[in-house]
Length: 444
Ligand code: GLU
Image (cartoon, rainbow, N blue to C red; front, side):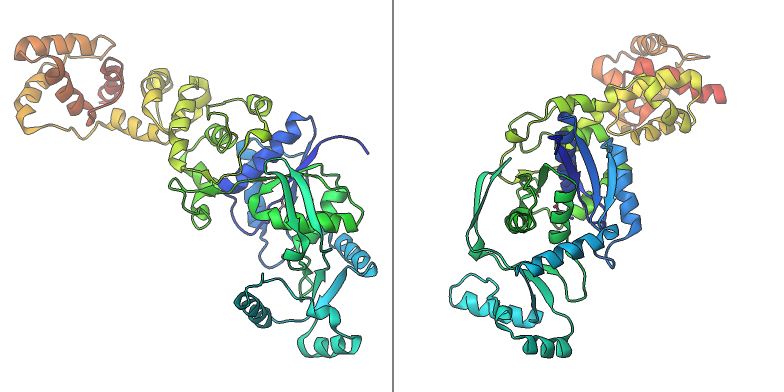
């Protein structure tokens, strides 16, 4: 066996992936790339009803957009045979048993246990069933579920983020690995895949810690090598509120549509929850070189989607005209105005979508914002606007004349003029804006 680092991102294609998934994908990606290893995209699609091809495509599109390129794709739905073989092995060694309780019965058992102050762990009643009793139950209720029989001892591992973890096997219910309808659950499929694909590192959310305990026992039963596990904390909202319900609203495809830059997302997610500061990183290689999973803490990580905006704005400021030329041309900006347009707008946008508003303003004119007390002043100033093409000097010469004629100066001079021409109190340097406004003139 080689000592090559192999990681995987293993989403279930039952929905759009969100910032929480991105954290998992990114960490696994960075570990593989930093070690010169392999990054597998594994589609956990053993649920034929909830898995959708449109989500598989969506996952690939999102990862592509972020530049998290995978070395190969695996699909669990194409490997079902292997999971059945593993299930048979577990049966043969007496570690797999069929159970027939209905959800209502299980619920009742749990409530009784809780009432008696006991942990709600499956009582293994099915282990006592004779073959005849099982036949009768199968006849009555159809196939049962298949549970893996845990060894009741402490399961320990050294977690890449949590440090030493120890779970009492007796405190966990024997996990169901095959459902009554025959569907293999990812708990088993994942163990088979991780073992067979030689996965060396598994990073996932801390909601999987108990799964990890049971999966370690399944791996050991099947003779697999246990990978290095790391469980990152879950994201919360800015106030520490659970994010789970809102995660749908933080789908990567929606952030993309909003104009958030992938570089902003990657910069934030590769550092958030770690002891290193969040800084804009525009090169993937810098993220790879600077990644260290041991810098991440176990406390819930606050995430505020608003933080993506200044990072996106900052990123856009680093772009040269050629990087955005297509976007600018698509707005209808004439090529000979593109450089000026970009230099005037780049520091006054949050996302590229904002360019549209600026171009609309320059090309169609803004709705002037004029205070009542400024009306006469503006009328007078407009009459003094020079004839012909506006240049870089127009603002300077014009405002000097207006100052001379009206006696206004400073803010009282410049602000009403800016607002009359752009409709806004803030924005780019007016000297640079004037020649762009002239585009309107030239068009008549
Ligand atoms: N499909 C599982 C999930 O998305 C994979 C968990 C894992 O990484 O093992 O929760």
